[in-house]
Image (cartoon, rainbow, N blue to C red; front, side, top):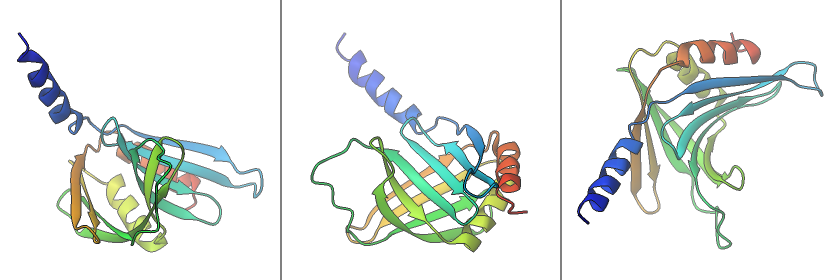
Length: 166
């Protein structure tokens, strides 16, 4: 009977990476500029997501991973390489800085406006999948995953319009 616990654990871990991304855009008025500010979120798994943020001045792209705050955290390490590919398109490569987004999430954040805009347009037109990868050069550790595109067209279009990126 005890064999069911390990099997259940392995099954849960295997399927947690396959959870479909749910895309949603949150759009608000920016009280300081009279324009809009927005966030576009694509869920990869229960603990990972993509987040695009814009306001009247900035456009950022972050890979977020759930992580509890640790007193000894040190984000002074080198920049992380973040790669993304939509369907069978080109590979987008970014230099991302590691940091804490909030108490619950660590973020790898990109500030390359042109590259982010190109990626957003591909996500808007995506047909099957979005592949992501992180490469920590110092330790040579790598992570990759795949996100669904369900809801990405509608929500990315809303985001681009709110951010005046079209």
